Image 1 (cartoon, rainbow, N blue to C red):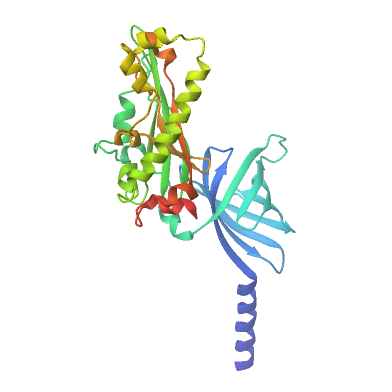
Image 2 (cartoon, rainbow, N blue to C red; image 1 turned 90 degrees about the horizontal axis):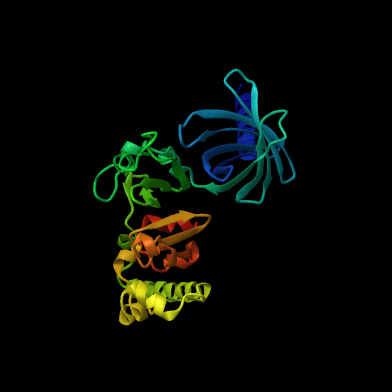
Length: 317
């Protein structure tokens, strides 16, 4: 009896050692965030597991086979009906490929990266009324202020990034008065407390001036390009737009960066982007002369400017 028990334990341990549990975060169709748990049986080349859409958290069963670096995984409903097929290539810490419905040629791009299972507890995206803005109102409160005048519907929220306890979202709004006004609003949240992240609070005060200097260089470069793009606008027209020659010259020469430049930022496609929609803040009648400023930092670049306890450190991993 003792020998049988030992043999049983050995078999279980061997099976356990051949099973590799991995967690992934990423996107289907580039804008649908998902969490995926995989158990890879390297001995039998089989896959089991589950995944869920971060918008609702409902678990979907997965099973499949591996052939070298190619993984073919079927998703099944509770009735054991195949509802989708993943065809993925494993590159070590990432899975890339496509998802399609059975008997359908339409494919949706899939991009997943391996992640720490500790993030799973906050992976489901909270409702808009649960996300708290810097002024302590909710995201839903703000979006209600931008309801469509005709349909009375709030703007559609777009998810730009949802990984490692960080959520980056945006929405586009329009309002008709004497002129059509429109814009895009961005927010980034810490999902561990559901509160908006203020970028200025994530920057190490000892590196702030260095960070501002880097931003100043990139703004200056963007303004030079903008002016070249409008080479048919005369200097007199520029001066008239700004009101006087001194304001005009100062506008195209960036001497310092105000901390307000950190007010709007977002995360998308492996970069943190500091964004200013209307840099010169021209009135509507001359808004065509204005410019958008997008200052991009890779996660590797950003790392050295952050506080040691910043949640944004997780972006680099």
